[in-house]
Image (tube, rainbow, N blue to C red; front, side):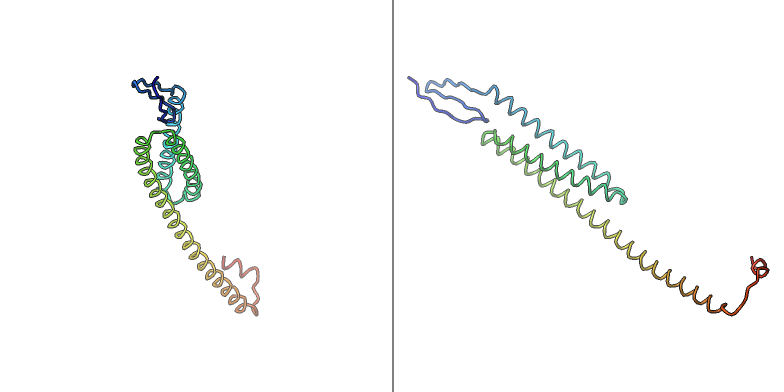
Amino acid sequence: MATKQKQILAGGECDFTDDCEVRIELPNNVEQLRVLKNKQTAALSAVTKKRNELTRLMLNNDNLHLVKSRLEEFNELCLHYDDCYHAYSSCLSEEDKTQELEKYESKTLSVLSFRKEVVEWIDRIEKQLSDQLDKASVSSKHSRKSKYSMNSYNASDHSNSEVTTTEVYRFS
């Protein structure tokens, strides 16, 4: 009678016998593996699509609010991709896991680098807007002081003089 060993392969169970007869019980698991791989691919595609959208939005400084909201969406899509990767890789053989991990780490580094670029862009635009507001605020204060000074100057100069309707029309 042949002795049997059991080994986990790609998330399924395989029976090995002494006479090299191999029976792989994977019909549902192969399909499950394909589904998980497709979900991971779709999740990465969604991350790439959002990344491209952010890149286009960052061409115009007026899109600050859109970039901020899309960055939150991008972060959520990245988390979803992470979940899909872990679900898929947990069903792989050790050799396949190593290959997938290399791809995953490469994608993750790229995503982190891009995320850093976006955050730096947001910080730069917010600083520019803050500087513009500060300048406008200072300018507005000086302008109000000038108008107030001119009005009080004009009022004090002409407080003793009478202006008739005829004189107003004459200067108009």
